[in-house]
Length: 445
Image 1 (cartoon, helix red, strand yellow):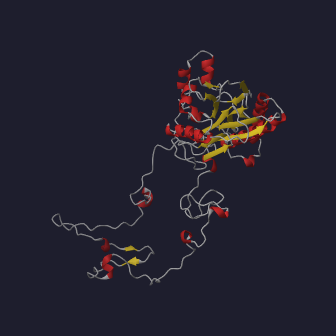
Image 2 (image 1 turned 180 degrees about the horizontal axis):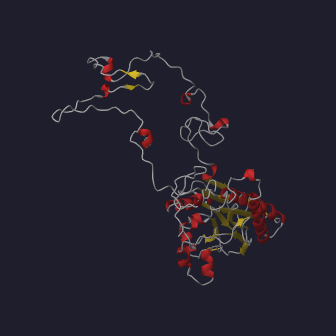
Image 3 (image 1 turned 60 degrees about the vertical axis):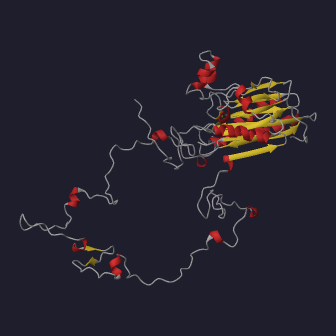
């Protein structure tokens, strides 16, 4: 029978906070199953914190002996602490049988007054940063602590004044770029944000606009998932914005962008050992990817993993649709006819992915699909941190604001807020892209 892993509140390697059930540290990837279980027995400590002496050493101590009474009818004498010989903290013998100090004398209070006289004023060792003559401001090009609002933030992300750890830059990210926008949040349970996104717009050779959105979700059980998602989203976004103006068909450009993103993630596993964390047994960096291209007449999506894209028409009387199929255990069970969708996604193995970007992926199979919607709408590109709380296309349509096509940033904020209100168990990232792509320079909203 497999032994239970010890319950840890922090990583033994980097002291990063852990969540219940974690098998690897999310910060350094430390294998928590390798931590030895705590011993069944615990040493007994005295109430004052002193370590008890072993029996053989305790026998050699010259303990004070209380005199025995002279007869059965004579009670033992009462001994006060001052009656027993001893030494002070400096090793000086203390007087025994000393008469008690007279009432009202300084010594009667139990406070020693034989210390040297103290000065009336003490010089400060350093200026008080809270009353510094020139407190740092954001305009000076330095980061100011979010806690004390006065201390500078050092390169490690801690306040030089109060020591408060500052929020990571990726804990919450928002970007609005003309008619499209994206928002990413760490969520309420994870200690860092392992999602990333890239949004952009360009012109096709005929002058038509094209909108691009890429969303990536780092695989938490792998090494440096945050670096993997960032590298993949940036590489895929740059590849699309470079290929589309050159006349590459959007679906072909999407396929090549996913290949480029895969190479970027693979390169993270090929760095020198000194650039990686000190844990050679860990998995290679990995992430999922979902992306969309929107033109005035065409909608193209591409994906690897279980991040998704949804189509939500502006006219809510028209049916919404999910545009992607998960690379996951649950999707395989449904496709094989072994389980219904509800049964499969209720299983604890539902979110085990069968496709991802990374050096240890079995085989890279980029999925692409193109659509020609006959009415306006929005494309929702998101990680499972959102769709876990709105899984079906109908559920997603219910939480997408009616004005999403003209207020993309507000709509992305609303969707992230929905996930956080539902528990925020995972990182949450969503991009909102209107269809058809409006001409560049058009006023939105």
